[in-house]
Length: 157
Image (tube, rainbow, N blue to C red; front, side):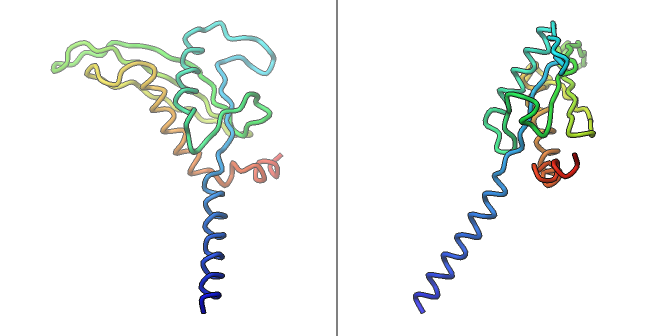
């Protein structure tokens, strides 16, 4: 009896580890700031700074991991633009809001994410906009995880 309980417990543990390892598989992502595969560099310090903001937000992600080259990645995030505009409300007066737009590319699929920093002087700046982009991106990755797996992408090529 104890032996069968022990074997059953071990089998359950193996299944738990197997299912957990699949859930912990992080999708490789490459971050790009406008410098294309043609080798040209991006002169925009603003886009480079936003790229750093995204990298900082993704550093401890349990969903994705940053790669050094596009060849190692399944998804590319490219910073397209960032801007600041002044928003005036009756209650809070004039507030600066920072916006960020990125393009996601996975194989032949592309889409864009945009986010704006908070208002009222709380959670403002490009860092907050990057945090919101990362939330959108991680949600997209979770929803598309099976298609993004290495074997699924290799089959599409």
